[in-house]
Length: 366
Image 1 (tube, rainbow, N blue to C red):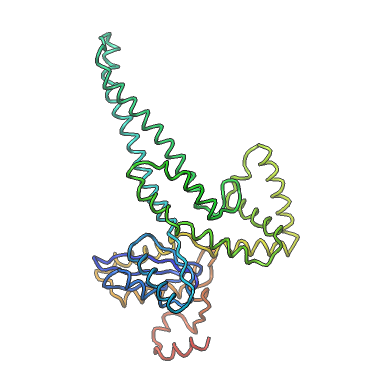
Image 2: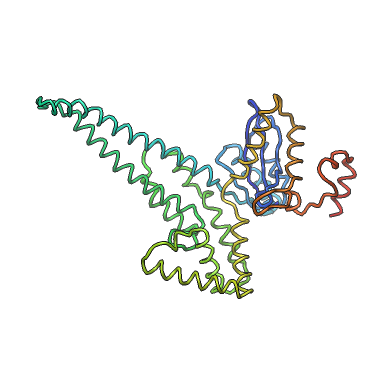
């Protein structure tokens, strides 16, 4: 396993340590544990000798476990595990902060409206408002201030989110340097205590490791740079179709280029190979642990059906999940084990009757 996404969920107060190989969607870790501290996680990371990149949230146990595992690798003179701080959880925390910001704006506007409403009624009745509008004016000024601040925060959050994408809004390949420069410019504008956690997460270097990883893989592709840049441009349009919209000169020129590039890809096999390899790089580089959240939902569903969720039951569920074939998506017709290159001699139900030594002997021959 080269890539892995990791998280934990709870059965009562007991944690279940979860791990998924994202390319195959194979459920590789599902262990009931006594705790979720760094030492416990480190023992799991140490099991995967080929692990190069881990995607996790900002949980203290996970972060300490990765640090300990990398210390063990350093002592053995091996490459450390690269770590990406999960974009999924970062954006979710940002959306939570945005909802609080919106709520503050609504409350400020509601307060001003509540103060003006009886005054407007008095004015319609011909009564004097002399000396009675001070609080209402102050509330309106406060609502305007909050509105301006909210607009600035919304604008900043949109720019921050764009820094976490593979491509910039202009269609250029995003880099660690460009993303960090954008974050340094816009993060200070996310003001208020509600945004402090989001800002801290985005200030960490691990938030942009995925960009460095995909950049190195693209550099390693043995293709002509001109063809590689054209393939990247096509991939940017595929992921950001809004680039083709608009009636300005740039959008019209880009639509014409996209038409010619599409014809070239249909007729030129070598260029089509470049495009496919570039697309494969992006498909096999991960920046979010949303897949492990999907497996978590499977465990929660099983937890709802059983009063006790034992280690054996989790192992049985994990074995079934990894043997079943996907019905939809790009993994359709394949099981997670098949996508990992594991060929099983029978279906999962028959394998349950095999002795462990027999199965171990069969797998060791692959």
